[in-house]
Length: 209
Image (cartoon, rainbow, N blue to C red):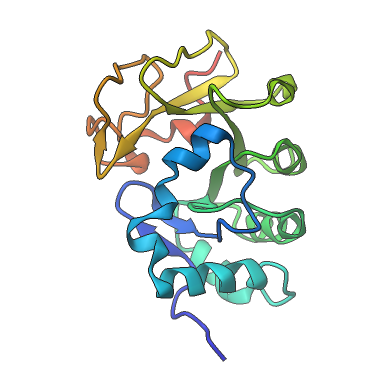
């Protein structure tokens, strides 16, 4: 039976992450589906797809010891570095975060119900709801913290205190032509900093008003 050497994946920008499948997991907007970074590159290689499927099934299981061991050694872990969480993953995410109280768990979701199920439960667990110019109006009823992306050329970012971070559309490591800098832009995307570990805005929510 297949079992990866490590459950967590590694990304030079975000650090350690829990990668999940896109198919059957994501609820993309039109802009998200068109710009999705997880539809190309290393994340679509057979090995990566196989591992993502394994992780999704693993999170529904009862024996989470391996993942607890991995996470407990880290300062921060990004949830759903690819894909999105399912409702049946919530119980396990909360369990792991409780067991690894010194590790900060953070991530983004297009599903308001996932953010509502996780936020406010534990001090080391924060999830941002992701919105963009093509998000349904109902998503903006969410009262918690959000991030905005992909920000395409011509998109106007609302002046909204709930927005913590803005992600300009980027491809192959570079911001696409026509996208100008926004004060809340992710600095790692612009290569102003080396990665999320230097900033931490997406899990500390600093700068949000």
